[in-house]
Length: 54
Ligand SMILES: [Zn+2]
Ligand SMILES: [Zn+2]
Image (cartoon, rainbow, N blue to C red):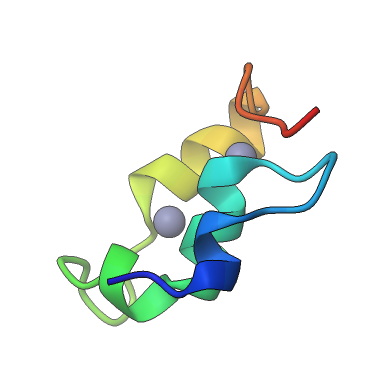
């Protein structure tokens, strides 16, 4: 279960990136130790779409 902070990003933060940063162990559990998270990489390369908190 993600923490309260992980589920409540402040304004102008990306919900997904925030969650992955603050609940990293859980969100990235299926990844190998040297494996990049596809969701994080996608946001890094393509932007955050409509997931920014307004
Ligand atoms: Zn993002
Ligand atoms: Zn991630």
